[in-house]
Amino acid sequence: MEIISLLVWLACGFACYKLAEKQGRNTVLAAVFGVIFGLLAVLVYLIIGNKKQ
Image 1 (cartoon, rainbow, N blue to C red):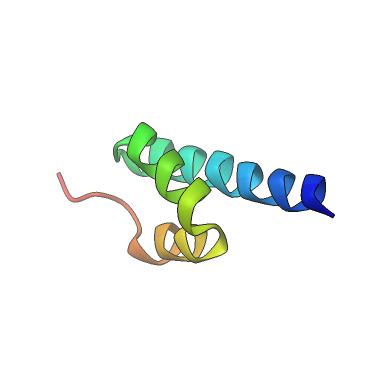
Image 2 (cartoon, rainbow, N blue to C red; image 1 turned 30 degrees about the horizontal axis):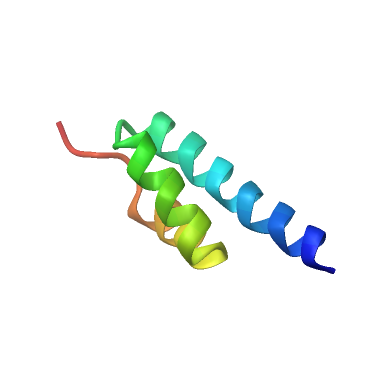
């Protein structure tokens, strides 16, 4: 069970990293938020959209 939880948290970090990369945001910070906050962070990055330039 612990390994599955770890994999889910790492997947959230990776998903946030890729979303931030696509949106032009800080990728390292996004990955850290994804690992710490999990699915909530992924949802936030999906909602906030692209960075205004």
